Image 1 (cartoon, rainbow, N blue to C red):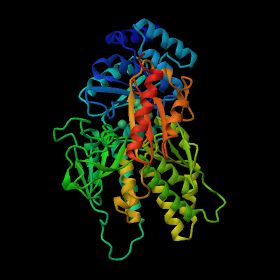
Image 2: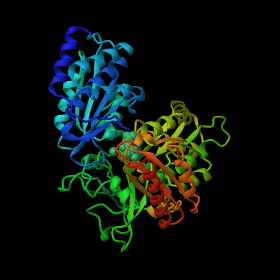
Image 3: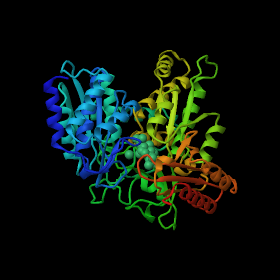
Image 4: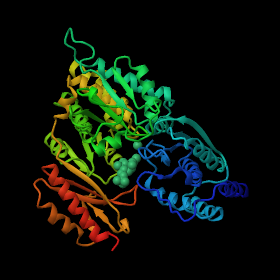
Length: 550
Ligand code: 16G
Ligand code: MG
């Protein structure tokens, strides 16, 4: 590192001292905290993003300012790697250490050491490029400025500010740019709309069928970035009967009584929905539009809903993919590998359903980086968290095979199945879970099957479940294994959980330390709601006995 680089970093870091007495942690997917304490964090992550670009020969890196489904006064920062996926896990400890370095000098030392170890040239001989995006939080603008300062303090690094985008849009653009594909927001919408239209055009039509047999969809946009982006998408999709609510323009507050996280956890309708929406297909996005759940309102149910969660989206997608593959692979030598990836939170009924379909179900710990990494191992890898984050990934080998079929196949049936799968690969975001592209795929499949939302919901019935959180003295004392299904430490805790679980029919229960909050989470399911509640409550007590403040 030359003197000029050294003094630029020192000067830049001295602008924003880190908050006193607070240790920030990278967590599951980046830093999140009250927005007022994040300037130094974002500046330093800006430096990290520039270094990551230098390390990857100038590939574009994404830096997103968002706190997703959390309250509007929070904010956060996430990094997209050159593939469009999450930051490589081996850089997380470096992220943790620089964010918590107490002063500019110690920050500089950490950067020098790391650059040396990773062989990152810090002499201006190479260029680095970072795409910046933010959600609609008011604090986003000044945090983007802090990120620009950080990036600008690495010689040769250039920041491109994309303004307000959804998190998946930023990931998509990073991936597209690094693959030399057109990478603007307009290109994103064009690709989604064109491939959606293609899926609709490929639906076998009986004569005289009307054009909107599955009726209206109402989308709650959590008063977040999804509102304006869905509006832009809608303008390209004259076919879809779509109503947007909680777009952020009606005066509602981001994530307050609205959004996918609220709807999924509370199992009630979001604000702005009521009895007049009974019988209509509804969906809810989260604050940065990387999660989506569907729901219908229960008549006279006091805001209660039938929740159609990520597991059911996964099941719908898996079923559709399997049907298309069945058309294609009857006598074929090439048998694509299909993998379905879930976490311990997946409702047991969904896992049973998928297994019955003959699919291979694999479990990973919670967090997109784990699910995504596993799904990438397959020709078609479908992953979803119950909370509505997920996507479908296709291997290059599989996509090439589809192209071959499209150009040589003589059977119209097979040709169309290949075209459908290829269109799916363009509708669904290949970089990360994306509420907008997930929505389009659900709508296209329901339309294809001629299914109502109730037909979809009836694929299987969820087992009743309950989630609780427990405050503990030190959540790192809880160590899990077997994709979080089993607690290894403290000794004896799993035996106690097993003993309680065994008392309930279809009982299943696990505990895990949260990656985003200072709590231990408890998940329980059983054959009745009362039983699931009881099991969760009794296991929460066990957690308190083993790990509480005693
Ligand atoms: C983060 C994860 C999400 C996970 C959640 C769990 C990403 C992009 N997001 O929001 O996938 O479900 O954390 O939170 O990976 P928890 O650890 O607090 O339960
Ligand atoms: Mg989100």
